[in-house]
Structure formats: C-alpha cells, structure tokens
Amino acid sequence: MKPLVLRRLAFVHLISAIGLATAMLAAGCGEGPAPETAEPAGTVGAGLLTPTIAVNLPEKYNTPDGMALAADGTIVLSCPNFNDASHPAVMLRIDKDDQVSEIMVLPVHPETKHVGPLGVAVGPDGHLYIADNQSDWAETPSSRLLRVVMENGKAVRCETLVEGFVQSNAVCVHDGCVYVTETKLKPDATPLVSGVYRFRLADLDPAQPLRVKPAGDDPHLLVTVETKNPDRRVGANGMGFDADGNLYFCNFADAQILKVTFNMEGEVASQAVFAEGQGMTSTDGIKFDPKTGDIYVADFDGNAVHKVDGKTGKVTTLAKNGNTTGAGGELDTPSEVCLRGRRLYVSNIDLPFADNVFDAPHTLSVIELPE
Ligand SMILES: [Ca+2]
Ligand SMILES: [Ca+2]
Ligand SMILES: [Ca+2]
Image (cartoon, rainbow, N blue to C red; front, side, top):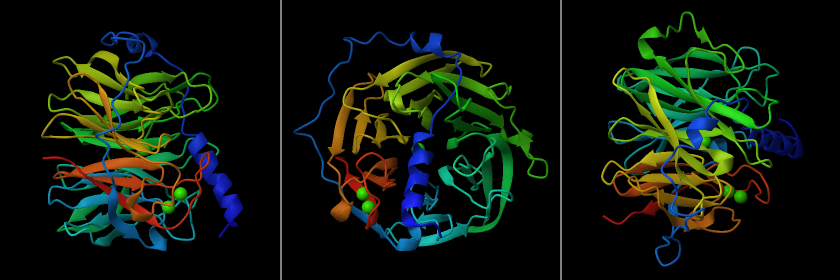
C-alpha cells in the first residue's frame, strides 16, 4: 500500500486528469435553445432538502461512484476504492432494504494491475457494462469497457469488450447499443476535447476486444465537446436518455448538460447545450426521473445535487452543503445519483480534491423527493 500522502496525490491527479482534447462540437454547442439571459439564476433556498444516510459503507468500500438501477429494484454500485487501494475494486449491490453485498471483485488490468470501475449500466440482458478508468496508472490509453456477465443473479465472469480509451467514464445501454463517455480524447490538447462513443452490442466480441483508434479518430466516436474552463480539465462525464430517446451528457468543468438528437437513421441530427450553470458548479453523474422527465445531477465541485427541468433546462438546487465528512448523510463530493422510487441515492466519492479531505464515514446519502 502506498503511503497515504502519495495515494492522495494520485487521486488529485486522477480527478484533475478527467479531461479531454480536440473538437468538432464547437458549432453544435452554440446552437442550443437561446438562453433567456446570459445565465438565468437557478432556484435555491426554501426548497432545499436535507440528505440523510442511506448506507454507511465499511472501510473496504471506501470510494463509491457509479450507480444503476437494475430491473429487480436493486442498485448496482461501482466501488473503485481509489481512496484506499489496499482494498480491491468491487461491484456492489444495494438491496431494497439498503443492505450491501458484493457482486464481484473485478479482475485487474493485465498490465497496470489495477482496475477503476466508474460508470455502470445494467443492460436489458441483465449484464453489467462498466467503464474501467485506467488513466491514473497507464502512460498510453488503456481504459476499457468491461462486461460482467450475470446468470441467475450471480456474476459468472468479467469480459473486456472495448479498450484504448484514455478515460472512459459513464456507460449507457440503449436500443441495441452501448454508449461510453470519454473524458479526454487528446490528453494534452487545449481546450480540452471529450466525447461520446457508440458501439452496437452485436458488434462487440470479448474474444477479440475492439481497440478504439486514438486521438478522436475512431469511427465509433459519436459526438465531441470542448471544455472552456481553463482551470479544470474534466470533460464528458455523466450520461442518460430521455423517454424520447434523446441523449444527454455532462460537460463537467463547464457545468453543462448537452442534448443530442437523432434522425430516423440513428445519425446525430443536432447537439446543443440544454442546461448550464444556474447554480451548478460542475456536472458529474446524471439520471432521468421516469415519472417527471426531469434530470438529477450530482455536482462534485459544488457539493450539491440539482434538478434540471426536462422541458426547460431550468435548474433547481435540491441539496447543498459545505465541506463535510459525510456524517449523517451530508454531501461529501457527490459524483453520482440514482433514483429508486422517490428516493434519490447519492454516491459520495470523497476524493481529496480542492478543500475536501478523504475521511470516514464512506457513504451513500439519500434525498427523499416529494411524490
Ligand atoms: Ca462521473
Ligand atoms: Ca467521507
Ligand atoms: Ca470528506
């Protein structure tokens, strides 16, 4: 195990590195619905809700991140354990009573000897599709898309489907395809350029993992986006689909959510900023509310959770607090959200970035939403 200080520096590097490279989307970015003002004020205040503890995680699950709701109502949770890597990275299950159990300790990358599960999606096949972020351990693009094959509720093996990402981050499975956000296409380019890949599931073969071409030259690259924030090299991050099949993804450091529409052939028809700022400091993980069509956003830098109106893009801050340990359910650098019924679960990844200190407890918070 590395000394604590070294490990913390490594995490800061990991987070600061969550960025991107060259762009094409710049044009699309400017074509969104014209904002009413330069930046309409979001809504905060009287409506603020108080998160409470959903799960106190043991030390061996010290870095919760990606979450996805499975068909049986359990929440699948990625736990890369960046904060204390003396414990292996693991996929967890949060049952309906908020009890935690292990799905699988993930096998490490054959060369880096590490594995960094971030975003996760549960496919219609019941298997888990996982972004393995290798960027802190590899000199060359080594991040991957993994699949944990599930049979009768049990993990039977972990496969590599795609390799060669710089920083794979979020995963969605939609309409026969798997989508992966790449937070950094060209590691040294300024401004940062990131994007979203799309792969047909039927084209992926674990016996011969697909290797994406570097630097944004791969034909599976669907869209790209530039990140203008000069102080934070973190681009494409959380991702989701609305009920009409439109794709939304986060541009983390510019505190944006972008919307991508498709034509009848499934080609990109438009790309535009759907929501930006309005109280959001960053946009990390997102989930749609199937009941209202609204989007919930984990705001890592803002230590907050927001709701974005799915029709207008107006932002309402649901919860926000200062720098904490996470005790009692207070937000502690939240990176992902997951809605189960009217309970909005929040992963507190607790990476030691800016003023935050990695500290016990290690938690999932929950925000009870109104009916
Ligand atoms: Ca994320
Ligand atoms: Ca904590
Ligand atoms: Ca903390």
